[in-house]
Structures are given as structure tokens and as C-alpha cells.
Image 1 (cartoon, rainbow, N blue to C red):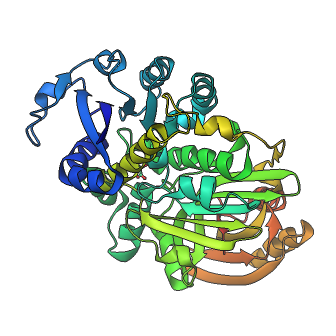
Image 2 (cartoon, rainbow, N blue to C red):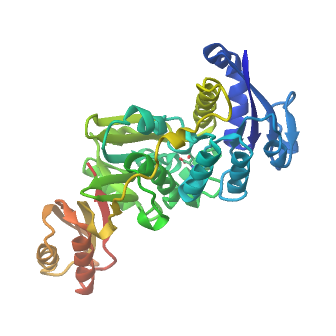
Length: 437
Ligand code: HSE
């Protein structure tokens, strides 16, 4: 029976899941693939504090070098997260001819070019299925399943923590802080949960999806990012009362030589397939020119779902390495066969993006306020689909105007809001949430 020797760096939530899955399903994987996966070494700074289950049978080390410098290890699994030392470890593993598997979306979003280039040069594989949408095999969908398509749009819920928070706030009235604490307790959140709630984690994943879908290499500044911190009970209530749910969406869209990339909360109609994606579940909607609309769904965070994705990379790389036509290792690199960055499309700035908007204006209850406001929107070509005015406190003469626009350009909407603010009819800053359907 063929055998592949593995080394794991990082025994956190996902690393522990990988060890557990190999222990629990190793025999089954062996039956299915004809390959025995031998996890030889586990390296983690806190390895001696690990108490979840006995680690008998593995060589344990505090330093990653134990894995990196072991010539017997053919696949190095990096699950420590963050930029450094993860980047150095991956590059070192590749340099020494090991295939690598990682779920490190932040690292790939920023240093993917360098990592894939080195892997191509050396001729080893980089597996990263676990980096986007947890267990959902969206990387393979874009690399293989939809390979013949021109991808027009990728739109998804790709952060489990924020989806969990928004679901709990909407369905049980849980506070933001309580919901975040629960997501952290369940192991969904990043070590630094600001990456989740500020939209950065979703932006990392969108960057990877955009490369596979559109052939571009986005820098952080090419992606417009807004998180969920500013969402309040008024936003949730508006969504509920008007047939929407609020979701943090990652959107990539290709239009005439441009690619727009944005992460922000959005109002999604309740009958849209993405509206029913609850808790830590993720879903990615992909539209290709031939395939048309497709959607992929599953748990986007958590120990075992992400471990399942990591193992899928290990199995695929092992199968290719063992069955490579030349029968020699390291195998011919998958990335060498496919050019990742093939497009010369430009990134579209957010102010040129066209979508629909929900606008809320807290107003002083004065004559002519609605007229003044709608006149300014009209002057900038922002067409109104629905408007609702309400008095929120009659004794204090406080009111609120809520507007749903038809599709409009972001620049026109933002300029209108600034102009409306300058008239002095507002009690507070206007609120803007994009609508996606
Ligand atoms: N913190 C991430 C999330 C983990 O909540 O989706 C999975 O990448």
C-alpha cells in the first residue's frame, strides 16, 4: 500500500480537527484511496499543554523546524494562521520540495503570488481548499467544475462568524456582543475577531475567489470593505419589516474590462437563496456564461468542517503525486499547468459601482423636508423606488425618512447624501445600506 508522510504545523482548532479526522476516518480514507496517510510529526508552540486527547504515536515538537527539516515528510500542513511566521514556514517547506496545504486566507490574499510562484518553480503543489468557505469545495468548483466558463459574478456569504452574529441578532434579538462571544466560544471567530466583524476575513476570501474566477491579483486597496459593527437595531428592524435580511456579502462582478470587488452588509430579499443561509453556514453563488447560476452551501467555519476541506487537499495532492505520469516526486505542479493571473482587467472603484440602496435620513420634523431631500436625489439622477416617512417622536419633532432607490451609481448617491446633510434638515448622519438581489 502506498504511504504518504505528513507533518502538521499548528495544533489549534483546525489542526486538532485534522488530527482527529485522520484518527477517526484514516482507515476509511485508506480504503477509498489506497493510500495510507501517516501523520509523523506535530509542531506547536504549546504542544505540551494539549489535553484534548492523547497524542501517542506522533512525534511532538514545539518548533516548526522539526517538520520543515524532516526529509521524510512529503506534505507539510500549515494551520497556524497569520502572516508570519506562517509565510516563512510555507516558503521553507516549498523550497525543500514538500507539497504544502494551508487554510490561511490572509496569507494567500497578501502573499499568494510569491507562494504560488515558488511552488511553480520548485514543482510542488499548494492546497488551499480550507481557506475559503470552510467545508464548501468552492476552490475546486472554480478550478475544475466551472473551468470552461467566463465567470460573470461571484457573490457569497463567506464569513461564518458575522453570519452567525447577524442570524442571532435577527432571530433571537441577541446583542452583538453576546452573539460574537458565542461565535468565539464555538471556534468560528479568528484569533483576532476584528478581522471577522470588520469584513477583512471576507475580503481575504474574496481576493482568493477573484483570482480563481477572474484571473486578477487584487491588492487590499482594490477591494471596498465595510464590516457589520455599525449595524443597529433600526437596520435589522427595517430589514425584517420589509421582507429583507441583512447579510455580510462578498461580491465580485465582471463588467466590460473591469472587475468590482466589495465586501459590505447588504439587504437581501427574503426569497433570495442567500437569505436562508443561517448561523455559521456559508454559501457562494457563481454565475458563468455557460453554466449560468450555480450555488454552493455548507458550514463555513468550525473545527471538523474545515478539517474536512484540509484533508481533501491532502488526499488530492497525494493521489496526484503518487499517480503522476512520470511516477516521480515532486509531482508536476497543478499551478504550473494553470496560469493564475491571466487577466488584464482593471479594478472598478466603489464610486463607479451601480446597485440599489436603502437610505435612512433622521430628520427634524420640519415643513418641506421630504421635498428638499427627494429633490436633491432627483437632481443627481437617483431614482426613488419607495419612500416612507415616519414621526419617531412627535413632541421632540423628530422624524425619519427611508428611501429605497432604483439602481444608481454610488457616486451620485454619496454626493446626494452629503448635499442633503449640508442643508441642515438632518438630526444625524444618513444611513446607507446597499441592496443586492
Ligand atoms: N473566522 C472565519 C469565519 C473562520 O468566521 O468564517 C473560517 O474561515
